[in-house]
Amino acid sequence: RVPTSSDDTPMSHLLDSIGLRNDNWKGPVKVTCVGDSITFRGCASNESMTYPSQLQRLLGPGYEVRNFGDSGKCMLKNGLCGNGGDPIPQCAGDCSYWHQDTFPDALHSSPDIVTIMLGTNDAKYCNFYSTERNGSPKGIGVGYHEAYLDMIDVFRRLPSQPRIYVAIPPPLTHPPGHADLPPPFNMSSEVINGIYPVLIRSIASDAGVDGIIDTWSALGGIDMDPAMTCDGCHPKDEAFGIIAKTFADMLGGEMQYGAIKTKVSMNSANES
Image (cartoon, rainbow, N blue to C red):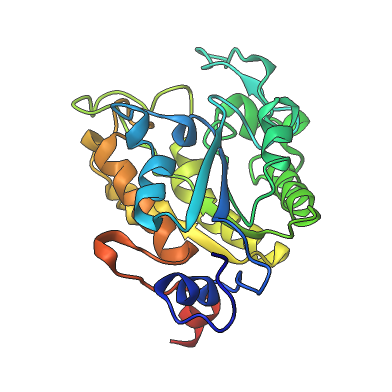
């Protein structure tokens, strides 16, 4: 049976709390998770432990969470692949999320909610610090900012009129047990741990999105335990659980143990 505005059930209250219910509501709330390898799988022990899979379990049957992660991909429209090299980063190939089949697949998913967590691969030195790819002045993310606003706008124009949430990516650190080594994949900890927590909030404000999901802080920021990752970048199961809980708290209702937790919205957070 389709819930109506006169229903007084946990599901009807959940849908009311996130502003998605009406008399024509049919089926679960569709959540489209856009991202890179951290969304696709990272270092999860199996597919059921990725954060989209754990998010599905937290949100419950009233939601349908779909994983549109694409490993190695960037927000930048001309982002490069590769792990770099010494002394000059050696990157090549098209690793822009914009140019992958995953992007139109996400656009055609008829989402009610879209989450975007891209930026970890943009933080490679050959991407973020290139004026050709990331604009001028160098190293402040002009191109990343513009591409992010464009992607938000594309999703916002979908017929399903989804709510849109942007996520600050997890922290970057050294590989576990190797404090003497730099972060992996020629990625910049200055970008991920210093610039993104500010820049992505600025993007969210400029775009007027529905919320910011701060996985960076949830995982401990610069104090994150490297053992929560397999390589200093990709989260393992426990970290994915924290990410999923952070997403669930923002997106609507945590139905774990049969309880419903009303969404913590940007507005209510600002009012408190």
